[in-house]
Image 1 (cartoon, one colour):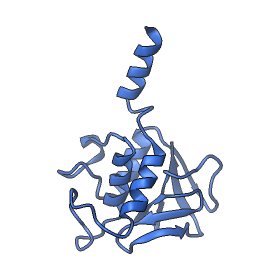
Image 2: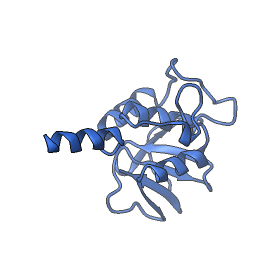
Image 3: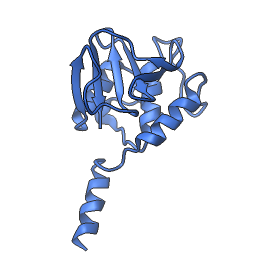
Length: 147
C-alpha cells in the first residue's frame, strides 16, 4: 500500500509523468506542420516555445499557470519555458558540447534564449518557426534541459 501511495504522489507531482518517447513521437509528427488544436504563433514572434511545449504536453508533462501558459496550455516564450523547466526540476547545463545524461526528449535553447527546440535523438532536434525535422544540434554555447 505504501509503494502505491508513493507512486501516486510522484505521478501527481509530475516526477514520473514525462514520457520522452511520446514527446519525440509528437515532435516527429508535427515538426513540419501545425496541430490545429493549438494556436500557431509563427506570425506573432515565433512558434518555437509553443511547439516544444506541445511536445512536452504530449509526453505527459503538466504545464500550469506558474509556467505562464496560453489558453491552450502552452508556454509561448523561450525565457518562460526555461524558467518552467527549472521549476519542474529538470537538469540544466549551459555548454558548448552536449552534456552527459542529455537525451532525446530534452530541450535545447540557443541565441540568448531566443529559440527553443526539442531533441529527437541525442544529437538532432525538431523545431518550429524555421521548421526543422531531425536537424543537427547547432554548435556553440547552448542551454540544455533534460529529465
